[in-house]
Length: 399
Image (tube, rainbow, N blue to C red; front, side, top):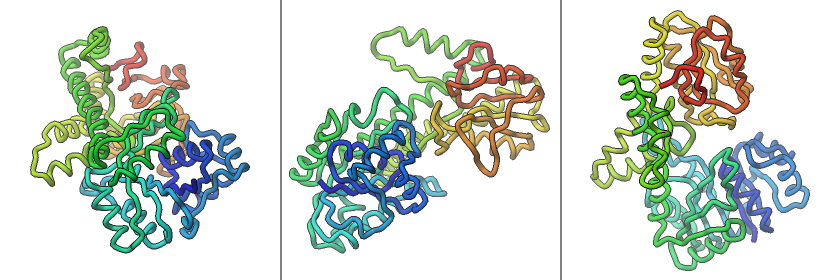
């Protein structure tokens, strides 16, 4: 089939390459012409998709990249994989979804199956995409929701072996979407409605947000009690049922966990239902930056103002070069606002905010925010004090 994927970030590129490998004729579309040029040269920008794979698919002409709207012509399947961030007021921002819908309604001249992978609140497919397109198009497209489940850097679960849920606005759409995804996904389940699929995705990440907040709050409690939270978690994890291991840290990052629960919170508010667990989890995780600073000052025995601090690990997750919603960046901003001299070290980040990675020096107070597997421990050991938010290195101070 002729497949057109709108958005070539972590989700869109994964779908584009997977569908192309399965034998579909795929066009990966993005408004970023520089990104399109990079991808067209066979250079991947995400972990898990190699330059070799990209070059092979391009050479076979199973995949091409474009920023030309006219290339949507003749597409049988359209996949929307665009960002759904929060705006400055911490409210859902569907501007990219709306732009994709407008693009489809104006430039697609033949009937197609339109699938939304972008995470949003329940009713987005029906009310924000289908209604918007059908208001300008008389083609009576089919519509379905297939919330993405891409986990950047995960070597165990890929598009192929991660179970997917899908649902169309009609039975035909559900079946067609199921059949499409089954060409490159091993496990695909049709659920009752698109709203069920959309809400399930929000629940998945809200579950993680709430449990991370719980263990972060537990870490603050046990820190005051003089008990190692990591020993507590390891002990609890010996139970083979009724417990799932989560670890404390600086906060949450990436697109999903810091953002998706707020989409569910928005839907709850619209329905007039309290969502106190979600609000509290957001507050606890957002507040970890301040709490870590307080703990470090307590351990050092004096204010950090005027001191040299090196934040080790700028990305939000180990071993991936992804800065989206990284709590490390919030930590750096907070420290600098306090009048503290701050630098950062991250082997995976070539540059950020006009700055480059700096080595740890002997006068530094180090906060390990994200622990990459290639972290140079000898470099970190030279610091005058080290607090490891991840708790992965027993020799350093932690919760």
